[in-house]
Image (cartoon, rainbow, N blue to C red; front, side, top):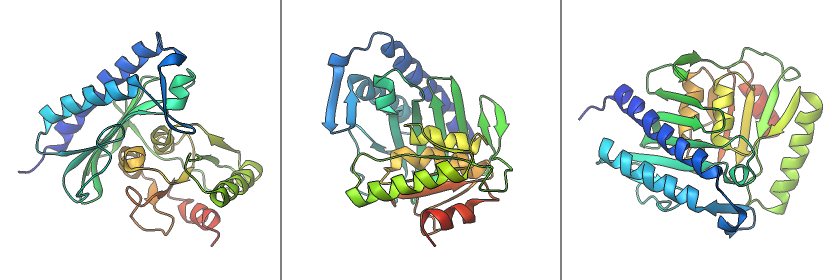
Length: 265
């Protein structure tokens, strides 16, 4: 059966909006005693779990034949080549807990490791970024595109520091982050990988890179960035960025230069 990706995408935006509205309502009454820990700096709450349940229930009705790969309860995909929803119900949980933007809902439909559609709803700004295979990328109904900045010096760079890095990887991150902070318009660490990718897609920054991310962190943002004209690869310059643990998304004028700096080539 051929999928109507445009219709699916618009249906998913409604699901993401509903989940985001739930998250915002819960933030108004959220207290620290409701925080749970999956490990140092790896936090979760009932809000993540309830948002995931809501999303899965809605998506299962929209496309029941698709598998589920989601952060809080379905995070061990047995066959990543099958059609699957890839869900982060609350990307930026630490930000949410501290009532600090941004945090978002991220939903992608993936087949054969390749995203077919992506939706990111930034709950803190009511911005819905979305696209589907063969389409442009949009934010709240308006087409978006990557920036046209063509020098590293005039770029804004976003990255993140995953909680489960080795000591050497942390040291490498800090050195690289310091380099970009000194040699570009600045480096930022915003705390939500999906939002970071949406921002690069919209031309708000020139590059996002990170290691040790999970599929639900990047699947939706990757296709949104690509369809906005960005180049998205893994650190080898290949296409294993959803499941391969490394990703760099940059505008099409600077991707190669950023890749060479980030991977020390």
